[in-house]
Image (cartoon, rainbow, N blue to C red; front, top):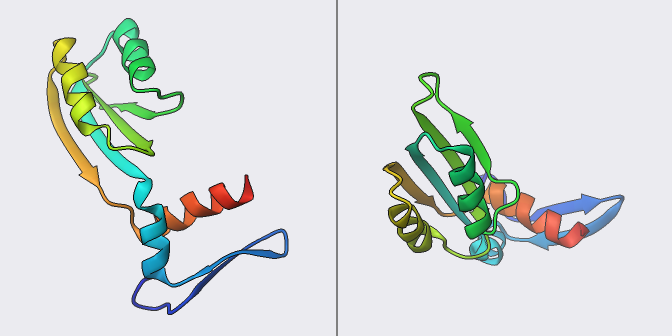
Length: 118
């Protein structure tokens, strides 16, 4: 989308809530961090403890078909990767894969639209 657009308008209930270049939208959303984690299967206790420690109410979690791993997709206003590693290590939870992502334009638009309309 970045290659196709010079400016982006976001309209909510007939009112323009955002009018920016794609680059500025991404910069404004830079405070949104995305962390994908795949860890060994967690007990319900461990899952609740991790969510609470990371301040997560609605992290997206999914289990693979073999039910030996659980994936977490976490969006936060701060980078939780170092804290997540320390927390998981302290709980002796095996990390299978961990990836941090920068916001894509689509993610940035959604995040900023949610902020503006709230």
